[in-house]
Image (tube, rainbow, N blue to C red; front, side, top):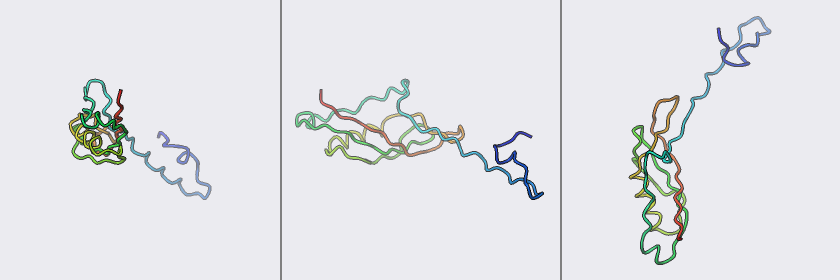
Length: 120
């Protein structure tokens, strides 16, 4: 019988059988928006934000469903500018994703996505 780990191979010293080893933790692969074939466009820079020189980083928490679509999103960390935050939210809701997986099975998961707005 194959061993599950060091704990299951050590014999018990009191004459009883060794306890069964705990099942290994589920392997979790996080969702991704970075796969090149997804062709997710960057968020549009709001024209008024561009004119006013608004820049910043928005961290969006997005729920990725098992089919790779986004079903909900919320601003986790604001850029400090409502227009930039809203542009980031609207963009990540339209993107396609590689869904997260638990033990190889696609599953809905929350994921943090940073969006950087930089004037050039």
